[in-house]
Image (tube, rainbow, N blue to C red; front, side, top):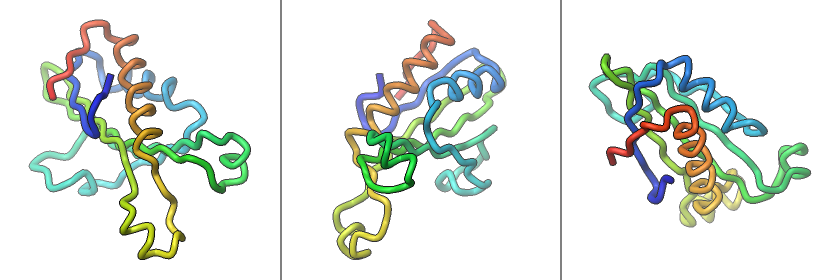
Length: 134
């Protein structure tokens, strides 16, 4: 289970199998690809990277409105002999929310961490030998 804001896992799964496991874990979430260069300042680009958003309030989610939103950034790196999966639970800082006058979507860390835990459980189900390396 992803205990902190960020976790890194190592797997022998192929990139396509990781995508399939993520697709299952993120059912009911809004998922979009992250363009190249968005995943921090990295020496290498990921095989793929997405950000997923989920609301705990299903009616609000259908209306695209309020509720406790969770968000997770996922980046998968193909290291040849294994793949690394980087999960980051997203949270909106109080300062950013206040400065914007409450006009930005607010990510709740507890909801985001639950999403990250759901993703890591789905990955572990797809690969029982999945290892958390950080």
